[in-house]
Length: 145
Image 1 (cartoon, rainbow, N blue to C red):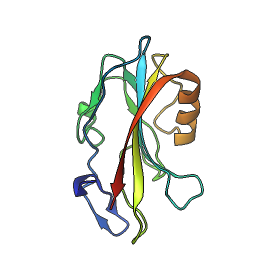
Image 2 (image 1 turned 60 degrees about the vertical axis):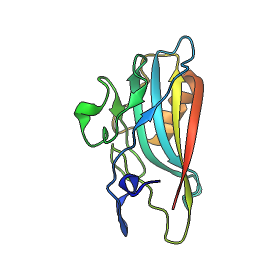
Image 3 (image 1 turned 30 degrees about the vertical axis):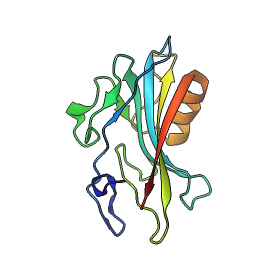
Image 4 (image 1 turned 135 degrees about the horizontal axis):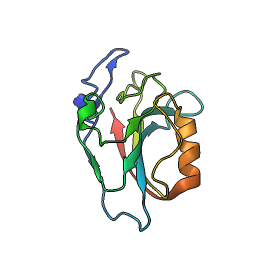
């Protein structure tokens, strides 16, 4: 993971810039997307949500770099929900010193145009809604450091 996508804080000096992501081969009947970034290796017993973007319109197949910090770059209608950092934005990699963690970026194609979440909804609430409306998902995993 490049340093620009690493957390700025907790002893890290990254730039906390959300990455550019793109996807294709969308399932038939897709009405919206949800994009998540999740660290299953966090020392919590339940992982750590680093980024959640919900209600991305079905005609969109990308998120621009730094769209998390610049809302004009987010697709119209999309919302960022609360992560485990307590904010509705992207917060990058920040594993405990000496550990390498996996950061799983996933795009979920949904069969509804919106899920019932807002910018204060937790990762678990978003995942619950995704579970019941998902057509397909695809992931890419990056490791830091």
